Length: 351
Ligand code: GDD
Ligand code: MG
Image (cartoon, rainbow, N blue to C red; front, side, top):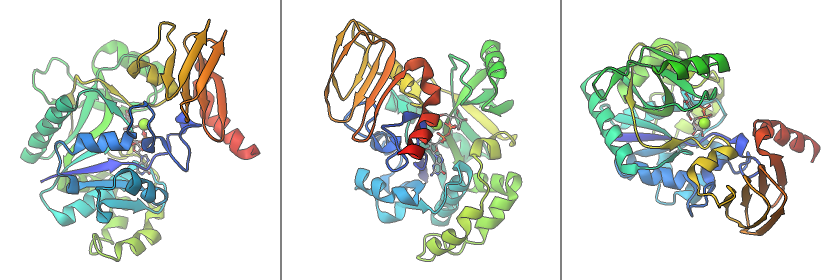
């Protein structure tokens, strides 16, 4: 009964210029491991979930990329979304299609672009989650111990004293402001939402009916059509009408059936260039090098990524992000990495 929804429709804009609208980060080897992030993630999931039960939800523009990166996947496992509407519509669509296949299906929802250090530990936690949601109606998320007040994450309030593997979530706050994030971090009662969820197809669909009823009714009209040749036409007409909302705001903040499994494996959502420093080795001068050969002369703390394995020579350069693609060469002080989206927009306007 194990199924997965692999979320692969995001744009990864803070990894520009490597990640672009046409070729977003999940299809790239951001860590220089020899595999793209989606390939690594698919490999991790297929250790617990039969390959043919893994559905890849993505924007229609990326179906060819998915086929290229995951040739082992059948056409019917790739679900193209006609419009970008964030994660809630996408997860509902995936759950409806899966329920049509198997009404007792249990679903793991996973992002395609994260890094996790220990696949075995990951599998054990997912298995525990599957067991729990098979017993009764729960929405489970995996929780990570926070280590800085990141405002881009969901924060999960729980009771760390509870000795069980699964804790009831007392409160879920998606993307708090900085002040709140700091308070949450200090209190010791909060975990980060890893964005990895476990639930039964039946119960997540019920939760949509309760908390996002318009979206539920929109998709319900297509229920006869799932997994038939007529589905595409229905989605073309209706998908774009769904509210643009994430599962976190749409369901997790509202439901009182959310539970968390605190996990110990190392996790990184590879949100920004700077986040690579935690997962990749550095030279003696703390330079991080991806797909390049670096000659650092009096140069430290840089993150260097080229597309071609080029030799990069730096002299007197400190704390820069240096990224070369066939189109763009970016040189940006590390402390300005939050401005990457704006830079990308400016470049797109002008060139
Ligand atoms: N299929 C599909 N369609 N996938 C999408 C879409 C879409 O329209 N939009 C985003 N995704 C994919 C992304 O590629 C990513 O793998 C995942 O869904 C999550 O989307 P993000 O846009 O990266 O979400 P976020 O980082 O702002 O926040 C989420 O993840 C955090 C942890 O990384 C939330 O779940 C937070 O609560 C969480 O802390
Ligand atoms: Mg993200």
